[in-house]
Structures are given as structure tokens and as C-alpha cells.
Length: 115
Length: 115
Image (cartoon, rainbow over all chains, first blue to last red; front, top):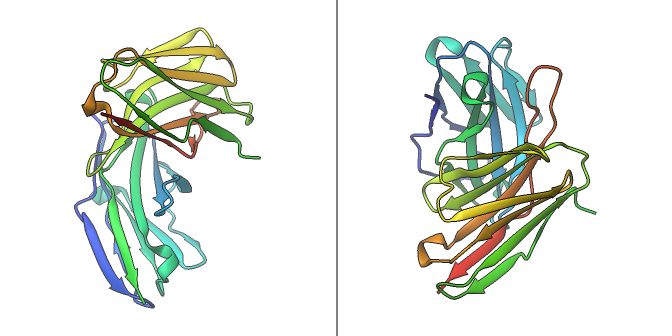
């Protein structure tokens, strides 16, 4: 079975702090994709990144970076120099062929960045 | 214009009423999905459709039905609404790559309240 665990329910930081959101996944498939989505207070879901199981290279996009480690089944998301606009709920998700390619979501981490 | 639209955006209804939530997309994707989001539970899949003639139940399909009227339209119906169906509902779409489902893109959501 596929499972995604986001152990941090809520995180609160002060602006300009770095923050890491944890994501641990479970799957028996060798081919799978991992995703991060952002849900700001307005409610929409915004796609941030997709990573496939064969590519363990870390990714950086501006202040965002992602660390994918198959050895620990983790796909962590770091925001550097956080800003108030980063306040949102962040979801990690997993899709695998053995799961009929359906997305399985974690329960989300609510990040609050205070001025 | 948005690529994935949902109507209505907000709906209040009474127990026992039949209601329909509609989703349209202009992305040209052949795969469409309905999710519900409840606080602290992440997103859970209700139904998904890989093409017009292929509709599948998701994790929590009881009490719901769907109709894929065209490639671009996917409707979710609550036959007899009950209060625990109060939630935020999302439609999503994805394309199919050569061997895998592509990233899912979400609509803005419909907030449904059942009194």
C-alpha cells in the first residue's frame, strides 16, 4: 500500500528563518513520483514540484529546495529566508504504478510565517 | 481564463437534497479526478476517470456518483446530501505521458455545506 506521512502538523517561524517540511513515504513499487503542493489561505492547490524515483538529484528553485533520499524514503522541502507569503498548508503526495497511478496525499503541514 | 474551473464555488444545501458539482477543463487532458478535503485529513480521492468511457471508484465513493459528459467535463453528484459530506471538493486533471500519468492540476475548489 502507498502511504505518505507528514509528521509536522503545524510549524510557526519568524520571517527570514529557514524551515524544512518533512515528508516520508511508503511504497513497494520501484517506479513512483513524489509531489509537493501548496494551499494558501485562499484555498486553491498549487503544484510545486514532481520528482521521479530514478532521479535523486536535489532541486532548487529560488528560495525553495527539495531533498529526495530513497535510502530514508524521504522527500523534504526547505524554504530559505521564509516570507509571510509562504504561509500556507503544504501537501506531499505519492503516485505509483502499483497504486494505479493515483495520488496519495499526506495530511499536510500548516506553515505560518510571522512578520 | 483558468484551465480548470469548478461551479459553484460555494454551496449551502439541506440534508436529503440532491446536488451536482461541475468541473470543466481547457487543458486537453484526458484524465479527471474528484477529491474531498477535510481539516486534518488531507485530500481523499472520490472518483477518477481516465477517459470518457472509463470511470473508477476512489477511496471514498459511497454516497457519491459521477458523470463524464465529455473529455472536458466531469460532474460529481451527491444523491442525498448528509452533513458529514460538508467539505471542500476539488476537481483535478492530468495528461498521460508515454508510460505514466502526468502531474495533476487542481481547480479552485467548491466549498459545500450540508445543513
